[in-house]
Image (cartoon, rainbow, N blue to C red; front, top):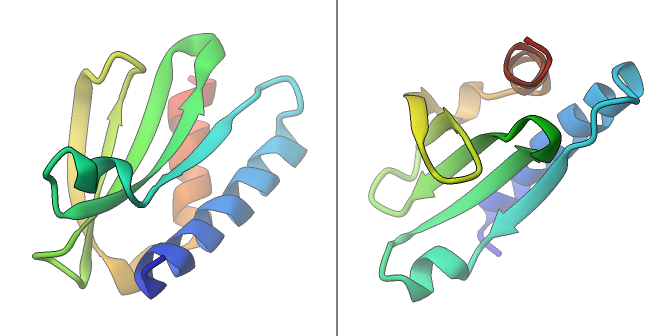
Length: 107
């Protein structure tokens, strides 16, 4: 696993734990895609946070061509993307991911 994916997954996992502590009635599922996208011909890794009960998903994509950036897409389980924003990887933190989770999974 690439170091950037490992570090980002740790941030997402901590945010997910805090989210669950605050919202025990809302289940989320975190996934790491470190081979799946590559097998499909995409030079990228991804982390997903699914809220299956309400059919919403947050996907964080690390493209090999943009090693200092992360694309964060908000959408649904079917893959429909409602919005996508690019962030500097070094600026992504637990609070920011937690805010995204609360905004998308609680509203």
